Structures are given as C-alpha cells and as structure tokens.
Picture 1 (cartoon, rainbow over the protein chains, first blue to last red):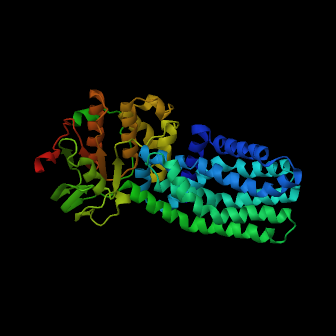
Picture 2 (picture 1 turned 90 degrees about the vertical axis):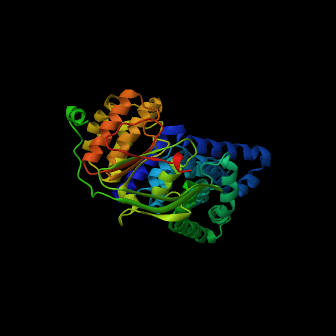
Picture 3 (picture 1 turned 120 degrees about the vertical axis):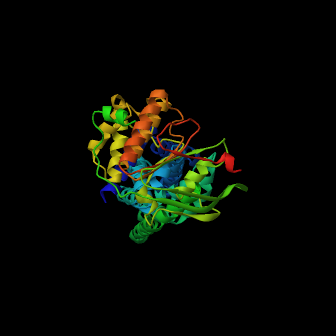
Length: 222
Length: 216
C-alpha cells in the first residue's frame, strides 16, 4: 500500500513540477469557455441554458489536451520498463500513476466550472451541482485518456490517436456529468440521478481501466 | 580487482537476496519478420557474469528484453528457477529511467522505497559510482555518462540478484568503466549474476562472452 502511495505522490509531484502541471488544462478550459459566448451570442437566457453542457464539453477537451504526456514520456525515458517489473503488478501501479497525475493536473477543472457557470448566469446551486458532477467525472476522464495514452505511447503525433480512441469512450460520462448540471438548471429532479450515474461510470472505470492500461503498456513494450 | 574493491571506504550495506539462476533453452527470437537467432541455450549461476557482444542488429537488446519478459520468444523457454521476473531482475535498458526535472535524491529515494531497500544504501552506492556530489541536481542537468551512473545506482538499489544491463558502459568514460567494474564485482561477490550487452571491452574477471554475431 505504501508503494502505491509512493507512486501516486511521485506522479503528482512530477506532473506538478514538469511542464506547468495544472496550468495547461486550466488555460485550455478557460480559453474555451471564454471564447464560446463570443460565438454563441450574448443573449443571457441562451448562455445560461448552454452553460452546463459547454462546461462538460470544454472539460473533456482539456483532459484530452494533457493526455499525451500521461504515458508518452514514461515510454521514451524507460520508466515504463521499470514500472512493468514492479512486484505490485502493472494494473495497480497504472491506477496510482494515472490518478496521481490526474489529481495534480486536473484539480482546477471543477473550480473553473463553478466560476464559469456563474459567469454564464447559471444559478449558484446548479453551478455547484455542475462542479460536483465534473469532480465525479474526473477519475473516469483521466483513466480513459490514460488508456488511450498507453495504447498510443511512443507513437508519433499520438495526440490524434488518443483523441480518436478516448473520445467515444468518454461519451457516457460526458452525458451524465453535463446532464446533472443541465437537469439542475431546469429544476428537474433527475440531477441527482445523473450525478450518481456519473459516479457509477467513474467507479466502473476505476475498476476496469487499469487492466486495460496494463495490457496496453505490455503490448507497447513488446 | 579485490584490491580495488577493498579501497572503497564503505560498500553499501544491504539485506541479502536469494540467489537466482537463469536457464534458457532453445530460444528463438525475431524482430518484425526477421529471425535474429534460433536454438539459443544459456545458463547463468549466482556470481557469474555474461557479456553479450556482436555487431548492431544481431539481437542483443531483443535478447535482454526477452529475458525480462517484455518480448515473447518465438520458441524456447526462459526459466528463473521458479521465481517471478519481478522479484529477480534489476533492469537497465537503453534509457536510464530518469525524469529531467527530478533530482537524483528524489528519484533514488523513490526507487529504494519501491523495492523495499533502505534509503541508507543510496549514498554509499552514489559514492561507489562517484556521483554523490550530484545528489541534488535534476537529472536533466547531468551529462549522459552521469545519467548512466545514476541508472546503475538505481539498478543496484533494487537489490535484485540478476542484473540485465543494456550497454551499461555506452556513455561512460574510463573512470566510469572502472566504477562499473567495481559495482559489478560487488554485486557478484554478494551472489548476484549479471548479463550485459556491450560494444566496449569490459574486463570483468571470469566473465563469459556470447558473441551473437558469430552465431549467424
């Protein structure tokens, strides 16, 4: 267990120290939600209605934006070889590594979603619901992009491949997370159900994705 | 060689490991569609060293990766006397497994923790490899040779009986090769075994040589 914590903190520390950590996804997210109103138009009721969906969508894209570094660097500097030789086994290690890096790089996303929701004129409670559901979605998003990143590790221009692999798998969690915020905004009682479904997808991903990542890493090392 | 190791003031004090034997029977390996070699037998007992030589492209790295279980052989078997690969191998590949922004202190502490080795072994090992003064430098600021030495320190920290080293002396200078020889002598004296792919002549005492180029 302590070795798992060691992997988690090392990955979080490395993501924090190298290449700006949370700055990349956060800047991308901020840019997306700042530019969207310029394209949609300034009508307040339109923005408030589109807000929750836009936040979910922009968050997904900003997770993808940082996915390339998740396994690509470890592949090229030989760290993946060493991780594959750890007695704890690759699935557990991949879980600790991916979540560690995810926490270090993606923690601002729910906060920005909360502020963004308010900025779009979404009521406070609905913005909070949106932020909480995004928080619940982060494990699923980061593990799915980790899976795609592991499949594409060591491939040139892996960003394209990662987007193609990860985007379809992220559809359910996007629908539920954005749906929670939208339902809350519309005063629909399905908001809580959507939030629980987001959590369910995240938990399922935590249980399954590490095995997929481990298999992908092994095939890339062979 | 004994005299050289005796001059080392403090050799790392680490808990012992169970010696491992390696036994390879009828191994055939390919890279892509190209068959590298077939029918390779080799065995290694505790304390022994084996140097893999041969021109580029003869399959030295692929053989090491097959022994580590990364590459699946076409035919043949690799046996480690019933032990799992994860409990036996110290691995140094083409790359050193260092992160450019991480200091050697943080990196080696991490790997010591991962392998359950005492952190007190870090400094003596770094002294043995003459990189102890670099302990607080990020790996990205080190020269290739210094990074290689740090990689070797990491292998030793794993405290595993069988070392697989891919070009361990590649970027090392003359003094570095002597340090490497000291490290390997220390490992073998503890009952460890080493297989190293190399283009340099490494004068390790009683090391066997397998020329993969001559097998073609």
